[in-house]
Image (cartoon, rainbow, N blue to C red):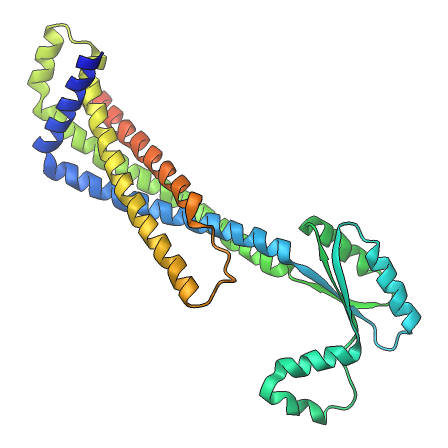
Length: 294
Protein backbone atom coordinates (compact mmCIF):
# COMPACT_ATOMS: atom_id res chain seq x y z
CA UNK A 1 0.00 0.00 0.00
CA UNK A 2 2.77 2.41 0.96
CA UNK A 3 4.80 1.59 -2.16
CA UNK A 4 1.75 2.18 -4.38
CA UNK A 5 1.02 5.52 -2.69
CA UNK A 6 4.64 6.60 -3.09
CA UNK A 7 4.46 5.65 -6.77
CA UNK A 8 1.26 7.65 -7.26
CA UNK A 9 2.74 10.71 -5.58
CA UNK A 10 6.00 10.42 -7.53
CA UNK A 11 4.12 10.15 -10.81
CA UNK A 12 1.97 13.14 -9.84
CA UNK A 13 5.01 15.33 -9.16
CA UNK A 14 6.71 14.16 -12.36
CA UNK A 15 3.64 14.94 -14.44
CA UNK A 16 3.21 18.40 -12.90
CA UNK A 17 6.85 19.26 -13.59
CA UNK A 18 6.67 17.88 -17.12
CA UNK A 19 3.54 19.92 -17.92
CA UNK A 20 4.41 22.81 -15.65
CA UNK A 21 3.12 25.61 -17.88
CA UNK A 22 -0.33 24.08 -18.20
CA UNK A 23 -0.27 23.17 -14.51
CA UNK A 24 0.55 26.77 -13.55
CA UNK A 25 -2.26 28.03 -15.78
CA UNK A 26 -4.66 25.60 -14.11
CA UNK A 27 -3.52 26.62 -10.62
CA UNK A 28 -3.96 30.32 -11.44
CA UNK A 29 -7.44 29.63 -12.81
CA UNK A 30 -8.42 27.73 -9.68
CA UNK A 31 -6.91 30.49 -7.50
CA UNK A 32 -8.90 33.23 -9.22
CA UNK A 33 -12.11 31.21 -9.30
CA UNK A 34 -11.89 30.16 -5.68
CA UNK A 35 -11.01 33.68 -4.55
CA UNK A 36 -14.12 35.07 -6.26
CA UNK A 37 -16.16 32.22 -4.78
CA UNK A 38 -14.78 32.93 -1.30
CA UNK A 39 -15.46 36.66 -1.68
CA UNK A 40 -19.09 36.04 -2.64
CA UNK A 41 -19.50 33.52 0.17
CA UNK A 42 -18.03 35.95 2.70
CA UNK A 43 -20.30 38.76 1.47
CA UNK A 44 -23.45 36.63 1.74
CA UNK A 45 -22.58 35.34 5.22
CA UNK A 46 -21.75 38.84 6.48
CA UNK A 47 -24.95 40.35 5.06
CA UNK A 48 -27.00 37.59 6.69
CA UNK A 49 -25.14 38.29 9.94
CA UNK A 50 -25.87 42.03 9.65
CA UNK A 51 -29.55 41.36 8.98
CA UNK A 52 -29.78 39.10 12.03
CA UNK A 53 -27.97 41.69 14.15
CA UNK A 54 -30.27 44.49 12.98
CA UNK A 55 -33.31 42.34 13.69
CA UNK A 56 -32.20 41.98 17.28
CA UNK A 57 -31.76 45.76 17.52
CA UNK A 58 -35.12 46.70 15.97
CA UNK A 59 -37.31 48.80 18.21
CA UNK A 60 -40.92 49.89 17.88
CA UNK A 61 -41.95 53.48 18.50
CA UNK A 62 -45.60 54.06 19.36
CA UNK A 63 -46.76 57.63 18.69
CA UNK A 64 -49.83 58.69 20.66
CA UNK A 65 -52.61 60.89 19.36
CA UNK A 66 -52.33 64.56 20.24
CA UNK A 67 -54.61 65.86 22.97
CA UNK A 68 -55.40 62.57 24.73
CA UNK A 69 -55.74 62.61 28.50
CA UNK A 70 -53.05 61.54 30.95
CA UNK A 71 -55.19 58.57 31.99
CA UNK A 72 -55.26 57.38 28.37
CA UNK A 73 -51.48 57.71 28.14
CA UNK A 74 -51.09 55.64 31.31
CA UNK A 75 -53.61 53.09 30.03
CA UNK A 76 -51.60 52.60 26.83
CA UNK A 77 -48.46 52.15 28.90
CA UNK A 78 -50.11 49.41 30.98
CA UNK A 79 -51.28 47.62 27.84
CA UNK A 80 -47.83 47.82 26.26
CA UNK A 81 -46.19 46.35 29.35
CA UNK A 82 -48.37 43.26 28.95
CA UNK A 83 -47.16 42.51 25.42
CA UNK A 84 -45.45 39.15 24.90
CA UNK A 85 -41.66 39.19 24.71
CA UNK A 86 -41.28 42.74 26.05
CA UNK A 87 -37.62 43.54 26.63
CA UNK A 88 -37.72 47.23 27.52
CA UNK A 89 -40.05 50.23 27.42
CA UNK A 90 -39.53 53.98 27.81
CA UNK A 91 -41.85 56.98 27.57
CA UNK A 92 -41.10 60.37 26.00
CA UNK A 93 -43.57 63.21 26.56
CA UNK A 94 -44.17 66.06 24.11
CA UNK A 95 -41.76 68.47 25.81
CA UNK A 96 -38.96 65.92 25.95
CA UNK A 97 -39.57 65.00 22.30
CA UNK A 98 -39.18 68.66 21.30
CA UNK A 99 -36.03 69.01 23.42
CA UNK A 100 -34.52 65.90 21.79
CA UNK A 101 -35.41 67.21 18.33
CA UNK A 102 -33.90 70.60 19.11
CA UNK A 103 -30.69 68.92 20.26
CA UNK A 104 -30.51 66.86 17.07
CA UNK A 105 -30.86 70.04 14.98
CA UNK A 106 -27.60 71.40 16.38
CA UNK A 107 -26.73 74.83 14.95
CA UNK A 108 -30.06 74.99 13.15
CA UNK A 109 -32.11 74.69 16.33
CA UNK A 110 -32.95 78.40 16.13
CA UNK A 111 -35.33 77.58 13.26
CA UNK A 112 -37.66 75.98 15.80
CA UNK A 113 -38.17 79.28 17.66
CA UNK A 114 -40.54 80.53 14.99
CA UNK A 115 -42.71 77.42 15.31
CA UNK A 116 -46.09 77.85 16.99
CA UNK A 117 -46.69 75.26 19.69
CA UNK A 118 -45.27 71.77 19.83
CA UNK A 119 -46.40 69.47 17.00
CA UNK A 120 -44.38 66.48 18.20
CA UNK A 121 -46.38 63.66 19.83
CA UNK A 122 -45.70 61.76 23.00
CA UNK A 123 -44.38 58.28 22.36
CA UNK A 124 -43.40 54.94 23.83
CA UNK A 125 -40.24 53.18 22.63
CA UNK A 126 -40.35 49.40 23.04
CA UNK A 127 -37.85 46.63 22.38
CA UNK A 128 -38.57 42.90 22.16
CA UNK A 129 -36.70 39.66 22.63
CA UNK A 130 -37.31 38.45 19.05
CA UNK A 131 -38.38 39.98 15.68
CA UNK A 132 -41.45 37.72 15.52
CA UNK A 133 -42.72 39.12 18.80
CA UNK A 134 -42.13 42.63 17.46
CA UNK A 135 -44.22 41.98 14.36
CA UNK A 136 -47.07 40.54 16.42
CA UNK A 137 -46.96 43.57 18.72
CA UNK A 138 -47.04 46.02 15.78
CA UNK A 139 -50.19 44.41 14.39
CA UNK A 140 -51.84 44.58 17.82
CA UNK A 141 -50.79 48.09 18.90
CA UNK A 142 -51.93 49.65 15.63
CA UNK A 143 -55.51 48.84 16.70
CA UNK A 144 -55.31 50.85 19.95
CA UNK A 145 -57.64 53.87 19.68
CA UNK A 146 -55.15 56.17 21.48
CA UNK A 147 -52.33 55.32 19.01
CA UNK A 148 -51.72 57.59 16.02
CA UNK A 149 -48.86 55.69 14.35
CA UNK A 150 -46.39 52.86 14.89
CA UNK A 151 -42.92 52.92 13.35
CA UNK A 152 -40.25 50.26 13.41
CA UNK A 153 -37.09 49.41 11.48
CA UNK A 154 -38.28 46.23 9.80
CA UNK A 155 -38.02 47.87 6.37
CA UNK A 156 -34.25 48.12 6.75
CA UNK A 157 -33.96 44.45 7.62
CA UNK A 158 -36.20 43.43 4.72
CA UNK A 159 -34.09 45.45 2.28
CA UNK A 160 -30.97 43.83 3.65
CA UNK A 161 -32.47 40.38 3.14
CA UNK A 162 -33.41 41.28 -0.44
CA UNK A 163 -29.83 42.31 -1.10
CA UNK A 164 -28.60 39.11 0.54
CA UNK A 165 -30.97 37.05 -1.60
CA UNK A 166 -29.75 38.78 -4.78
CA UNK A 167 -26.11 38.18 -3.86
CA UNK A 168 -26.91 34.58 -2.92
CA UNK A 169 -28.55 33.84 -6.29
CA UNK A 170 -25.81 35.66 -8.19
CA UNK A 171 -23.24 33.75 -6.18
CA UNK A 172 -24.79 30.38 -7.05
CA UNK A 173 -24.77 31.25 -10.77
CA UNK A 174 -21.18 32.45 -10.52
CA UNK A 175 -20.15 29.37 -8.57
CA UNK A 176 -21.57 27.09 -11.28
CA UNK A 177 -19.79 29.09 -13.98
CA UNK A 178 -16.46 29.06 -12.12
CA UNK A 179 -16.78 25.35 -11.35
CA UNK A 180 -17.37 24.62 -15.05
CA UNK A 181 -14.33 26.73 -15.99
CA UNK A 182 -12.15 24.91 -13.46
CA UNK A 183 -13.38 21.52 -14.66
CA UNK A 184 -12.57 22.51 -18.24
CA UNK A 185 -9.05 23.75 -17.45
CA UNK A 186 -8.12 20.88 -15.15
CA UNK A 187 -9.56 18.23 -17.47
CA UNK A 188 -7.57 19.66 -20.37
CA UNK A 189 -4.41 19.63 -18.28
CA UNK A 190 -4.95 15.97 -17.44
CA UNK A 191 -5.88 15.21 -21.05
CA UNK A 192 -2.50 16.50 -22.22
CA UNK A 193 -0.79 14.35 -19.63
CA UNK A 194 -2.80 11.29 -20.68
CA UNK A 195 -2.02 11.91 -24.35
CA UNK A 196 1.71 12.32 -23.67
CA UNK A 197 1.78 9.05 -21.70
CA UNK A 198 -0.62 7.03 -23.84
CA UNK A 199 2.02 4.47 -24.88
CA UNK A 200 3.23 4.06 -21.32
CA UNK A 201 -0.38 3.51 -20.21
CA UNK A 202 -0.90 0.88 -22.91
CA UNK A 203 2.22 -0.97 -21.78
CA UNK A 204 1.05 -0.85 -18.16
CA UNK A 205 -2.28 -2.33 -19.21
CA UNK A 206 -0.57 -5.10 -21.18
CA UNK A 207 1.47 -6.16 -18.15
CA UNK A 208 -1.67 -6.36 -15.99
CA UNK A 209 -2.02 -2.95 -14.33
CA UNK A 210 -5.55 -2.37 -13.04
CA UNK A 211 -7.70 0.59 -14.04
CA UNK A 212 -7.39 2.07 -10.57
CA UNK A 213 -3.60 1.80 -10.60
CA UNK A 214 -3.51 3.72 -13.90
CA UNK A 215 -6.07 6.33 -12.88
CA UNK A 216 -4.84 7.30 -9.41
CA UNK A 217 -1.76 9.37 -10.47
CA UNK A 218 -3.99 11.50 -12.71
CA UNK A 219 -6.61 11.89 -9.99
CA UNK A 220 -3.89 12.97 -7.56
CA UNK A 221 -2.66 15.49 -10.11
CA UNK A 222 -6.08 17.11 -10.38
CA UNK A 223 -6.50 17.11 -6.61
CA UNK A 224 -3.07 18.71 -6.11
CA UNK A 225 -3.90 21.44 -8.64
CA UNK A 226 -7.21 22.11 -6.88
CA UNK A 227 -5.59 22.07 -3.43
CA UNK A 228 -2.76 24.47 -4.34
CA UNK A 229 -5.10 26.90 -6.12
CA UNK A 230 -7.60 26.86 -3.26
CA UNK A 231 -4.82 27.25 -0.71
CA UNK A 232 -3.47 30.37 -2.43
CA UNK A 233 -6.98 31.83 -2.75
CA UNK A 234 -7.62 31.17 0.96
CA UNK A 235 -4.47 33.10 1.91
CA UNK A 236 -5.45 36.01 -0.36
CA UNK A 237 -8.97 36.03 1.05
CA UNK A 238 -7.61 36.05 4.61
CA UNK A 239 -5.35 39.03 3.81
CA UNK A 240 -8.18 40.96 2.12
CA UNK A 241 -10.66 40.26 4.93
CA UNK A 242 -8.15 41.38 7.56
CA UNK A 243 -7.45 44.56 5.55
CA UNK A 244 -11.19 45.32 5.29
CA UNK A 245 -11.64 44.84 9.03
CA UNK A 246 -8.69 47.13 9.76
CA UNK A 247 -10.02 49.82 7.40
CA UNK A 248 -13.46 49.68 9.05
CA UNK A 249 -11.85 49.92 12.49
CA UNK A 250 -9.58 52.82 11.48
CA UNK A 251 -12.53 54.68 9.94
CA UNK A 252 -14.43 54.38 13.22
CA UNK A 253 -17.23 52.33 11.66
CA UNK A 254 -17.33 49.93 14.58
CA UNK A 255 -21.15 49.76 14.32
CA UNK A 256 -20.82 47.58 11.19
CA UNK A 257 -21.17 44.05 12.63
CA UNK A 258 -18.78 42.02 10.47
CA UNK A 259 -18.16 38.41 11.40
CA UNK A 260 -15.04 37.97 13.50
CA UNK A 261 -11.90 36.87 11.66
CA UNK A 262 -11.70 33.63 13.62
CA UNK A 263 -13.17 31.09 13.23
CA UNK A 264 -15.09 32.51 10.24
CA UNK A 265 -12.17 32.75 7.82
CA UNK A 266 -10.94 29.28 8.87
CA UNK A 267 -14.31 27.75 7.98
CA UNK A 268 -14.31 29.54 4.60
CA UNK A 269 -10.76 28.31 3.91
CA UNK A 270 -11.72 24.71 4.75
CA UNK A 271 -14.71 24.97 2.40
CA UNK A 272 -12.53 26.35 -0.43
CA UNK A 273 -9.89 23.66 0.04
CA UNK A 274 -12.49 20.90 0.01
CA UNK A 275 -14.20 22.40 -3.06
CA UNK A 276 -10.87 22.75 -4.88
CA UNK A 277 -9.89 19.13 -4.22
CA UNK A 278 -13.31 17.82 -5.28
CA UNK A 279 -13.36 19.89 -8.48
CA UNK A 280 -9.80 18.81 -9.26
CA UNK A 281 -10.70 15.16 -8.83
CA UNK A 282 -13.83 15.57 -10.95
CA UNK A 283 -11.86 17.30 -13.69
CA UNK A 284 -9.41 14.42 -13.77
CA UNK A 285 -12.16 11.81 -13.75
CA UNK A 286 -13.95 13.50 -16.65
CA UNK A 287 -10.76 13.65 -18.69
CA UNK A 288 -9.88 10.02 -18.00
CA UNK A 289 -13.32 8.77 -18.86
CA UNK A 290 -13.44 10.67 -22.11
CA UNK A 291 -9.92 10.35 -23.42
CA UNK A 292 -8.35 7.25 -21.90
CA UNK A 293 -9.62 3.79 -22.73
CA UNK A 294 -8.60 1.56 -19.86
